[in-house]
Image (tube, rainbow, N blue to C red; front, side, top):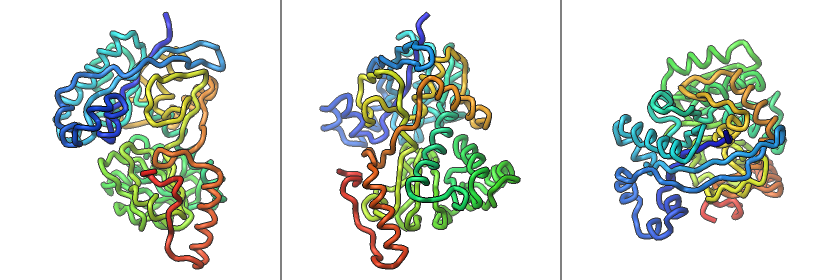
Length: 376
């Protein structure tokens, strides 16, 4: 039996994402119309994925992208049961195509109970990809810190969304690597619980419900399920690194427009082993994928057809296991993206220089680096 998988995607930027598959509809429909009509669309077959090849075994995968038509705003407005039914219908389409493993992308992975109900209602195993997302996100923070000349052993770090499935484990990892850790979340009781999990290691841990508390942080990892951006230019000190794992983004486009002294990266691109062809442009360069996609592929290559990163609790051991498994098959961190554009070494050098100038007081107002402007 062949190794196969399917991965569910959905529109996040409604007009732009709908236009990737249906250019005319993306042009003529308003965002409000897309949000409304998406309630009535069935699951959409997007493309076949070929060429994923394990470096360890030489085995190849076949996969499929399937779109859940709901936007994040639609998922938030509808009863959770209605969202479950649509995601399960996507799983039904995946089953008909021959998929043996199903990955839940973006908001489909966090709605409700984080995939538990979906897994219960489908015959095929399910993963949210959260464990490998943690692994790659922290790897991206480490690499970005190195490139910006920030020592992990002397850095202040913050995790925004620290009480979530991904954020809480990222916090536990970072607590072992930095001396100062700030946990940001909505509820003080849940923050206290995560703080206890982080205690006893390298970091002095503090908690806050105010996102402005991240200003002292050199390194920020943000992963909330907010539908709109929450990190604004005034929240970041010069030279800060922000790793934005959330989809939709937590970091405002305004940061790229007015702060050329901070480095904002997405959660880390993953290089996929083999001559992969996704058959669809989801915004990444050829051969690159999100970590949640990569986890789904890696599990299928390993023949681990079982529910994996499901629910609101991810164990550190699980993160380490999937990291080792994915590395064995050839998946690895591969470059940075910022607002859907590649970040070059030259841009990082420019950001470091600007941050140094601002800290010295030579120039007080940051300007724009056109190459990473979110609107091109």
